[in-house]
Image (tube, rainbow, N blue to C red; front, side, top):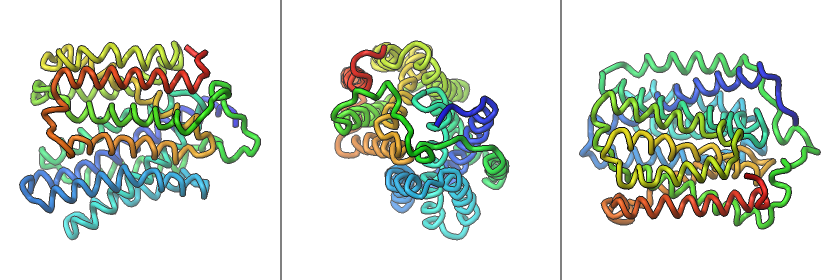
Length: 354
């Protein structure tokens, strides 16, 4: 499976990136509308938790199924359809809407994630660009609910994205080439399972830190938008820069640089924004490192990274969130994450690749 033509690469990134923002916007609007109106309701909290389990934890088994049937584009289109159905059924049955939104989100992500991983096999740039718009979509969906904008308006983005994905030519996939060679960067990998576990640990820790961070300035609208922009740019540029200058150098270096900014400078908008940008640069690297270890199962690999995200997000529920958000704990967590990422990437590349 070679690299597709530039038109195919750009077309898929545009279609699936836009769809990612649209899907996350509608899902955020559906879920946030429940919580916005009934923030003190136990049922609303349960539905929000259920959505996150469906949307994130179910990605790994759904990704395995998508890889088995070899239909990632169909999975993405079906996922978009389920998300649209969730918005339409929300006024009549909230629980059903949550289930549809969760499964639809999961199916779209593993389908679109597989496409992004297949655009430039072994490269972190395209997956980072695919994932980055999700943060903007979540922000847009929450903003729509706060502003009283009907969710129906957000469905227009889903319709356009559905048409774009249906029309764009997909790339070749790993399972389309029975004799596909594993990328050279992975050629010396031993104990693949341990390497994957190390990378997933890094992802879980990143999710944990991102959840407990205290950024008081985000209540300002302009700074809140800037925070979303920092996250989007970090994810989008992280993979591109890592491919250009080296995964270990960029990903581990960015984590180390973000540690003092997010730990001790989070209350300062400039330091906090810089920290968010650097912190999120690791995302595409950890995603593709996992996929490289499972070259014939890209959807499953994408799903595993999202499973790690939800595990990291639920860790604070087992204890006091204040403990995890303490500056020294955040600092130590990021440093430990950087060390684990360095070990995982060195194992992936045989200790030779930057």
